[in-house]
Image (cartoon, rainbow, N blue to C red; front, side):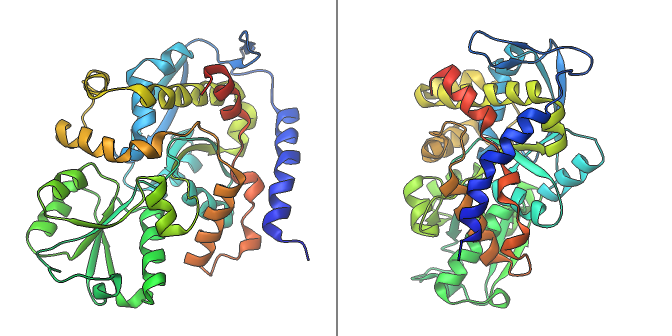
Length: 358
């Protein structure tokens, strides 16, 4: 019997060719042109609204850098940032036409696809989930294993599918059920910090730059770390992609030049990150409000840098691993309902990778 995952992966190539054939050649009344490498270039001053949860979430760093370093501008794209309270809010904003793209976890894209959505990821920002799970020594001084958290409270910031995946996997490995751990999500870092320091929580799971500061001060003991490939393999037993930029399948078909421009800017930022030093980052992010101390943000980035050593491309193995993890987390979403071959395309990232030699 053919494995449905394998079948979907083989069908992806056919689907992407169909997308290319169905692409409209006119873009807002302006014909797109090709650069020297044969890559679609957007028309000058092309506007696109993108939803982002929070700037202090390290997963959004490539997007931030691409904007601050002028990479979007060089692609002829004017980016309109739209703050989001949650990934779910991003999906709603897309459906209402308030934004055209959203930065979210790839696992979120899969869940939306399973629920009848048509989100398609087209460039990867982080090749790891960037989530850190830590216990608070003040509450769990004698912590030895994850099962010690039975009956305890875990906080997340912000609420995300990536944090759910990490917590679920750790619980599963420890033999804990969903009712044996209480998970509380916060939208604001100040509220979470207040709970952490006043005894309201026992552990945390998040990708916020705040973790680095708490770790340095001994207020958090990291017990699971998906900021690196090594840590991700330890938690999931295989690859697990993190943040992506996605749009509806319809938007990608109608606006391929814009999607190519965004992919170019993100991949170029990933390449820049490979050799950038602390002073480069301080200069690049000088005008950004990070919701975090810049020293702590840079410390957090150094711990997370391995997760940004990708090339914007999503491997079939990573996509399949994410799909399997989502299916394990929520059995109410049957594997057969998730259309993996429509959940991502490497068409734009591969061209950007070749152009910038990443």
